[in-house]
Image (cartoon, rainbow, N blue to C red):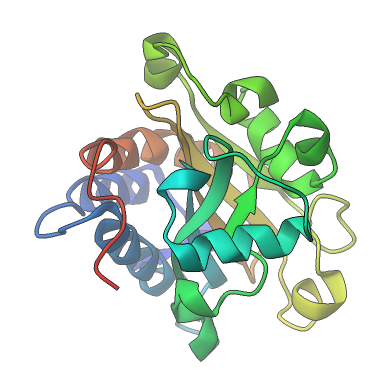
Length: 243
């Protein structure tokens, strides 16, 4: 267990090593992602109450629309409201979720976040949380939505960063204030991840009920590098688990 409020460098090492090995026994990236979000939800705690510090933990990965199953394609289409979409369009796809509410523990029960089509730069710029995540990761929007990525070895090796919103309340970058932030008392939001050799972005997002310090947020930059290792082992195939 790690107290998220006083998260230490030693905690960072222990957590990173645990996450590094989450592909052991996993049959797909989705299986691995489920292990990761459940581990983080149960292990990051509020020391005062002994309860999970995060109301919700989610694992996202960009994935071409044509590679999604019909259910996820329908979810992407629902967001577009009739606008046509080409098969190569990248969709920010929810692979795994764990949280305080029962329905937050199945990606299929998510409303509006199962597959978010990143149609073009204008579309991304109208989604403030996604835009901030990309920019704080040190990436260009064009790199993330590129439908025919070239070799990105340098970006893959060097880009491990964090998306950090110290105060979620009234933040223009965190939507659903009345439906989510206020009723669940979300204090801070922290995301960490990077790019894969396939040209896809992966990101784990923590919605915390306690305030996360800048020092703690910075430690997750190094955890991202460790998480990339098991994630990359499934980058080419076996992304989704059995239905």
